[in-house]
Length: 384
Image (cartoon, rainbow, N blue to C red; front, side):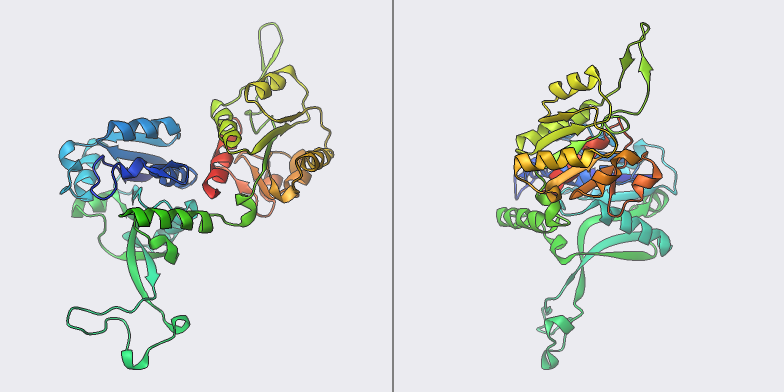
């Protein structure tokens, strides 16, 4: 099992209530939690806090993997170390010694899901005991004795030829539970280094850092400009907004199971002015009622196999947007043509393999009807 652990106390001398201060439209801690929640390699996430406000906000996110750990006030003081609250936490739960433990900093919102995934793979591939994250600094350093540390001043290298120096950025650390308990430290034994992008080395200590970090978030955490420019989000129904189950009442009426988190996701999109729609081959009153409740902008039912793309093009023409500005999530072969044409294609993790094999498609960690659409929406929000 892979466990992520985020310490988040009330106190902060530099920026008051830093962990829940607004950052790019969400409380700061949201971004680390979202990146972890979106990782198929993370099984459980714990937020260790002494703060009622933080606890309330984290619970409102409704992330399925997240639990609250009520840390001792002594381990939330200015002089308490992260190790002290880690040890308190591990003494309260029974984990296997082989379980991986990720200490994650909420103050590193630029960390991506792919960073966590790739770092876990690197630790295992290198058979290391621990892993730390670093960024490469291409600055020239001197010590207090007026001596250069990482370069020769008489042969000053050009930046493009300078290898630089690895600097620990503290975004996250990985070790196994047994090693942490034994050494009472987040790092021990043979250490692997996971190098992150230079911009991910920023620290949120002052107000200016905050502004710089938000600019970096907008610039770099958009994998491409298409995702950050999504204007329309469309979804299939069966197997996407629902679990594909066939349910019938005692009098023979057909029923469908939807997920309320998906509905909240559409609400979040609407607040940003992003249009929403449902395109499905089904034609039922159930879907009509659900679409009305979620205040969907466009509902097209009874759309045949080859017409989903045609319908989408008509919507784009009306909204004066291109297919590159459309995100669509679907699960089966009748969605293929549209998925291959939009700017952002996505599918639930239990979709048919033929759909999951579409190049560059985002496969969610959740199944259809279990919040897969919300996961896609959160991903879009992260990129904005």
